[in-house]
Image (cartoon, rainbow, N blue to C red; front, side, top):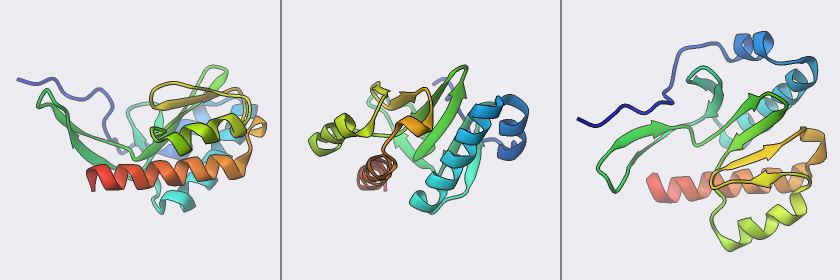
Length: 139
């Protein structure tokens, strides 16, 4: 039997989660992130697990045969950092990271101290590219 995905869609309130867990500065970033990602994805914000705010969803099956759902794009606030979950895997997307501003990029997550340090036009371009890549790959 395959294990369940740890991060699953929940019926939790995005607004309540942000309001009850975010500091004043982080609250403003979360509000701004929600305002940015909703129009780009065309999807409403939904809670995934206790702390990820996701937009849209897709189903994937891994090489192991394990399958599950995940948000197309999402974010979480972790202590003093904002983590944005999205796909940056083609060369053009990777090249854009150098113009984004102060951040560090993992395999599928962008970590920033504050949203104000980013070039929002570049960020929007990266998110759009990620959404397109996920749609091409998973439908």
